[in-house]
Length: 250
Ligand SMILES: [Zn+2]
Image (cartoon, rainbow, N blue to C red; front, side):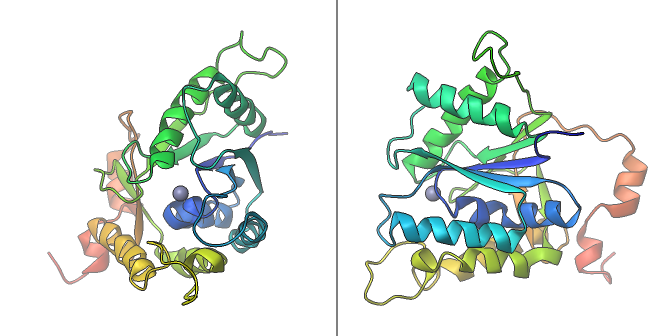
């Protein structure tokens, strides 16, 4: 019997995985794959909400996406660092327990220092997870692929996933985080809770979708070149292109 998960998204804070990979996660579940989220912090520094409320929201979002699992490592919000050997080892141990076929983490550039630190920490931990002489009591693990999700800063995607079929499910998962995205006029203003935030995220999905001729898409970066076995089957069969969105175009 297969152990581990097919897809694991690592997120600095509860809600990052849903905001930027919610479509990918919902599609994986719809395809019968085992998908999970690994949150690094409980978001205790967040301007809005409490740790307890955020945890309940995260579990509701897990249910909305139908995830196989979700874990929070409880690292200090605002204190994620690739230079702490304990964090590297703790995360490497978690990767060995989850054993993802495809590992997904935040892209290296972002406005939030925790997001950039998560990228660097995950790079180290994913490498250490494959070393047989580290944590010898747990079998080493190397994912088949590591992908990165851009967040607030633009990155050139290696590919875009068509999430048109699961946009409503992605939005339902994001809506679970009422403490973060809700229109609570009495709460302190934040970027995510601002009136333009969710429309901007929808516009982002539409923008990337348009690149592949779909109504909505999520971008991913692979630092390794991606091979295609059969270009004719790929581009002639299920590949997306402007013809899908604009069938009259030639
Ligand atoms: Zn975040």
